[in-house]
Length: 117
Image 1 (tube, rainbow, N blue to C red):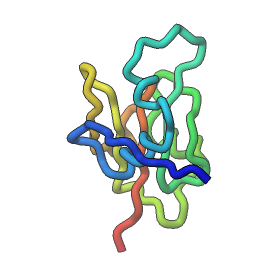
Image 2 (image 1 turned 45 degrees about the horizontal axis):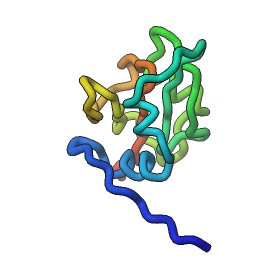
Image 3 (image 1 turned 60 degrees about the horizontal axis):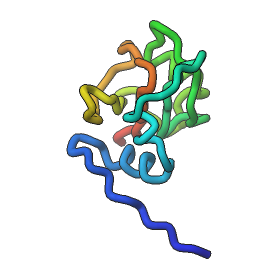
């Protein structure tokens, strides 16, 4: 079995979990930063402690709470108080702390972290 190495992700503000997701999802960062051909469906990505982490169809006005619902809701360890979005702004990947009421933009990566006990 070939050993897979995790490449270095150069983004100072990226959270470790998101860095791992980007490293294990070949081409995700390149897809987000390179110009994409127009498609009919924009998407967002949700990872972490939700029932069904995946990519979902994005629609104007969707909130973080609605995105979590599309992903099947929080797992028993997921926290609605520890949400972050990775977003490409001016060519830089930045991490933004958000609430359930904040909007999700096309191509956002939502990270749901664990509750603090």
